[in-house]
Length: 238
Image 1 (cartoon, rainbow, N blue to C red):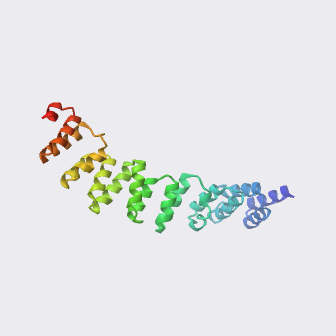
Image 2: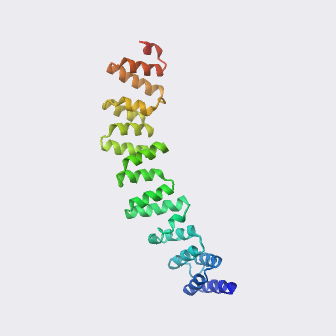
């Protein structure tokens, strides 16, 4: 009986009687039958391969417990409403990323951020946290963990717009833009923030600029410390 049902369902689809073929496959709840019928519906040279029947293929893949195949079809069809119940079963970063983009285009920022996180696209999570979800502290935490230059630049720009000079300096350094961080630190007298962000990993040129800054300020102790870091020992001793 099972083989007859599979054969009849597949033959109906091949002959273009898709509705009856799909109904027969779903009625039997046979995973292998559903998988084979779904594959037929996706085949480019089959009579039923047009867009209107791809949704049937997705339903069959769901019954066959192949959620990633179903999700891929729903994305292709832009059937966003059918995706949400399935996404918890998906492990593919690519599919989560495509779902995230769809949710972002709808303005569903929270769902988009969660999907980007599952896609391991944390720079996009940071972007949404800053631009739409009003969660700068979480964005900063993510970037401190990932050390992503792109994410750090997003945070630095956000901080500068809000005149949060300390955060802007820290994240400019993380964004591998120490020269801009130094200029901001010099302008707003936040050099300690800059040197803390460097974390003793500054280049000789960066240390030289910091030493000159402190020397101009009359802070001999700090100037000496950074001249020493540049190995200019006579200036450090003086």
